[in-house]
Image (tube, rainbow, N blue to C red; front, side, top):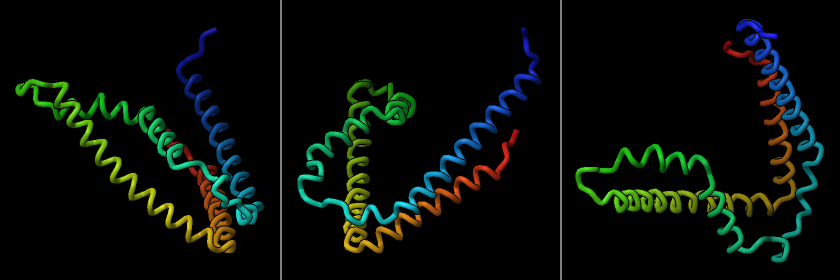
Length: 155
């Protein structure tokens, strides 16, 4: 049985609306849970055994970065535009551009990591701050879920 184009469009719009409302409902649920359980993060175990080692964190971060599809697409789609084919040594040029990208990424990510670590240490000093942070995150998720539910599609 063949459906017309109009029926397919109508069916896809219905599927979109269902997925949109399910996603909005889930965000609202997560927000409510974050608010309900905001005080559970105040008693976290901060002993050295509870935290992963620095080597493990660096190793996991490296594998996440290397397997990130955006990184692969960047190297395949963007870097070749900056290669000078007239100068030859294309693999060397690509390697140089890749290392420049890597150096910028390490510098940028290091700044973010140090900033996040400092902010986390500041929040961890006060259970009240952690509670407010959890509640604030919950309110934001509820707001995003509500906005998602109330906004229409552009089709």
